[in-house]
Length: 82
Image 1: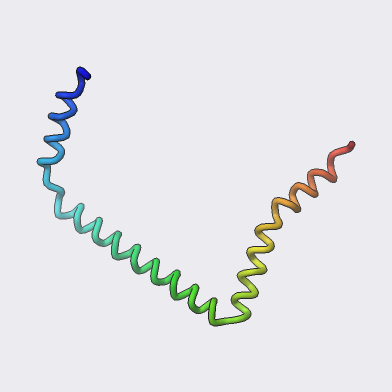
Image 2: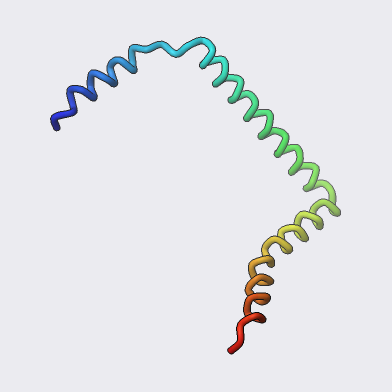
């Protein structure tokens, strides 16, 4: 391929470049924030698992959201004349 030496030169330049201190700080802060958010979801799931009303509410919400396409199809079918 004719562009291969040009690509090899570009990739060598990119590998030689050092990331800025600001970039590494931002990446590490984002990783830590993601870990904190994940722990929040785990804690919320644990609390929901311990509470019977919370489990009922989650199941009811899932049932309602899952039935929306069927309700929409029933509504559209009512508008069609066969």
